[in-house]
Image (cartoon, rainbow, N blue to C red; front, side, top):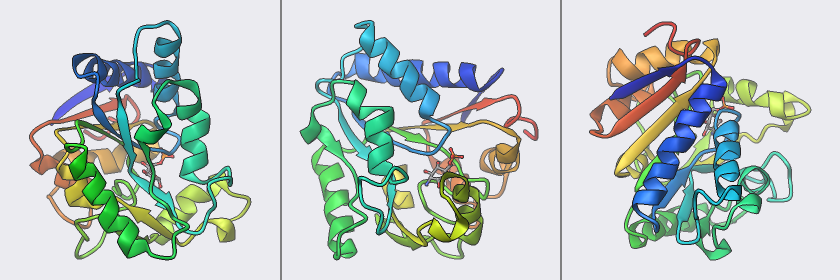
Length: 241
Ligand code: GLP
């Protein structure tokens, strides 16, 4: 694992955007795995700025998002569909047909999951997967557990995640209890992985990711088994490394 420590959130985001941009410049038809949450917002801003300055072209890029809440329509501002449109897709030239998001509203989650993994495979696999991390070490919505489901699947959100994500909702009760997420194997099949984290509340998870035991109880620790992982953190998230 390559760990890059940047001074603050802004520097972390700039470095992450440069890494994504270099991937797209090297391979114009890159397949990107994308993440949501508060962490990558600034990285998306930076990429939008590069696009506006004609420094990057997304016209051949394909994207696959990591996860989505169940039973939250795409018009709901808390859905990851809405988030991606607002924070990235509406501002760059990725063709709509190249954008893939999980449908948390489907009544056949099993079919949705199987088809999503197949679509990734047909696209040639993910070249670069961007990840955030939950304070409990979840990646995507793969929550700490005795056993992990390796493929794309439906999950029950951990109480800790419901609490962490309740800051985006009016109340804790409004946070969906279920989600659909790429599985750990789907993530680990990506050629390269870029994990971002900032802030003190991620410091413990980052320490466990980088040097803890490899265990399903800290899903991000499984990244230690991947040969091409870059972790970019700010000084606060690096505090315990
Ligand atoms: C959310 C998402 C993850 C994200 C993580 C961290 O629940 N499912 O994909 O990486 O939690 O979110 P944040 O960046 O807001 O701390």
